[in-house]
Length: 353
Image 1 (cartoon, rainbow, N blue to C red):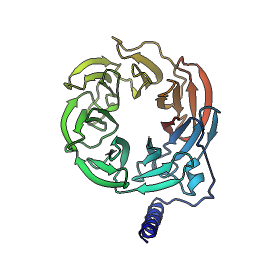
Image 2 (spheres, one colour):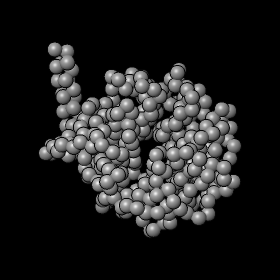
Image 3 (tube, rainbow, N blue to C red):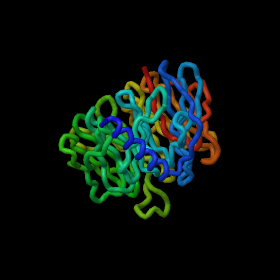
């Protein structure tokens, strides 16, 4: 009886969430991609249009399935799909403006749970099997999530900061960047679930990674002309995670707008977008001057490096209106496939055997 009651409660909650997000019912399709390696493409969609979607790319066969979430579940994904993470065989899709996280079967794309209670969730990071953190755009809170119960179990106040974004981990410490109108990297003790320190970097740190030497790399975009928080030269910082000291700082030109910092599978080479796509070794003494993928007069909107092969996946939003494209390159920057995506493809999540 308890299982039936819980199931009914889940269905009622799902209906309420679906109604709130104005999803339309669709015919459902059956999928089974339990075979080879795959890549989930998170298509952000347009703000307030509710046209976010999820695509799935079979890496070995080079086949792509569009709109797999709505086709598998009969409901739309929602408004502004932000990110996706796979943990213990389950995917967690964070839908920012809809304020939900869907847990989804990675082979059938069917909904397992719908997690609510967020204001404007951005990214999820799994501290361990019993705890995950969820950053948020507007709540000045980092949510603590229990992955087993799929419920919010607590929160970490982010006093004086409007938003938190991506997260990376070094030992028990979680580092997160305060991107919107801010210049801080916050340090969280994951055992105590509290902020214990912060690092001042440049204006608007938008992406972070950790390299093989346990150094934290932070990319800032410098704001923009007329930004109430300021406008400065964008920079790339290298930070020692042991003493939180900045060890290197590389400056871009004032009107550059670098973003989407990534790292390869051996954790020794950085990639980022700055109109073109750039590649930089972690021991470099200067920013690169020759791009690995030249700018082609379009909108490069997402970037990922395969953790298995170091292949480059580049998302092209084209004009933010029509369906975008994904370009797949070898680690040597040779284009080997062009993939159709949804509106504003922005985030990648690899499903590897």
